[in-house]
Length: 422
Image (cartoon, rainbow, N blue to C red; front, side, top):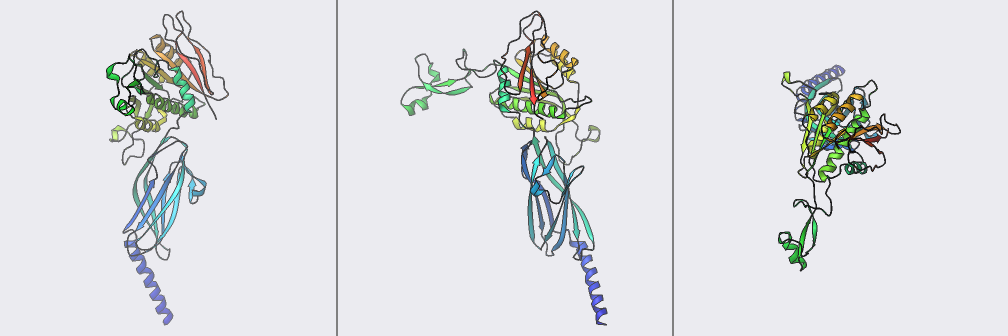
C-alpha cells in the first residue's frame, strides 16, 4: 500500500509539474542575441552575445537557444563548440537558470565576406523538470551588422591618385584656395592684410599670416563594373573592384575632392522586418542601382561603405558598355572618369574608346590575377592626335599600359593592371 501511495504521489507530482511548466515556462523569459559592433571591415573579427533572463520564481532546468548566421560569418576556434555549418552557420546552446537569474555568453566571430547580415529570430526549446516534454517558442530579434569591403592597399591607391594629375593640392600655386588651410608662417611684405592671423600674431609677438594650399576644380567620377557573367567566373576580382572603389573614394575625399560612384550593380537598402530579396509588387524592398555622390570634406564615407557592402554581385541592372555609352552623351568637362572593371572584352574596349573620343579623360583600372599577363596590356588607341597626359609611375602590383591617343583629341584613356594575390 505504501508503495502504491508513493507511486501515485510521484505520478501526481509529475503531471502537476508538466501542467504548471506548460503554462509558465516562457513567462518572464527574455532572450536577446546581438552583434557586438554595428560595422566591421571584411576580414576583421567581432562578437556575438547571447543574453537570457529568467524573471520568474521558478527555475528553468534546461533551455536551448537556437539561431542561424550566414555562412560568411564563422566562429573562431575557441567559440566553434555547439556550432554546425551547412547551408548556414547554426548554433545551439543550452542554459540552466535559477529563478530571477540572468546569463550572458559571448562568442568571437570572423567576418569573411562583405555584406549586410542580420538575425531575425531565435528559437527556444524548453524542457520540463523530468526532461520528458519539450516546449517551443520563437523570439524576434533585431540585430544586424555591416561588413564593409576591405580597403585596398593604401600605397597602391595613392599611386593611382598620382595618375589623376591636377587634382591634388599643390604647393607654390598660382591661385590659392581660401578654404584649403595649410598652416601659419611669418609675415612678408607682399602678404595682404586679410591674411594676417591676429591670434597667432598676439601669441608669438610677431606678425603671422595664414597659408593655403591650391586645389583644382575637378571631380572624379568612378564607374564600377560588378558584372561577372562569363563561363569561368572570377568573383574575387569583382570583390577587389569594389575594394578599389572604396579605398580610392576615401583617399580622394580625404584630399577634399568631389567623388561620384556609378555602377551597374544593385544593392538592397536594409529595412526592419525584411530579410530576403523582395519586390515592389509585394510592397517590400526592391534593389536599386548603385549611385553615390560625395562632396569632398563633407563626410558621407559611412553611407558609401554601407551601399558598397550591400551590393549583390550576382545581379546587375544593365550592361557596363551601355552605361559607358550613356556617359558619352553627358560628358562633364570638369571631371575625370575612372573605370574599374575586370572585363576587357571588345565591347567594353569600344565603349571606352567612344567615351574617350567624346572628350572624357579616362583611367581604366583592371584587376587581374597576380602573375598573369592580361590580354591587351600595352595596347593603345591609335590616332593622329597628341597623346593624353598622365604620369607613368607604378607601385608594386600596379602596372601601367600605354596611353592611347584618339584622332584630333588629347583624350586617350590609360589602362592600369591591378594585380590581385590569390
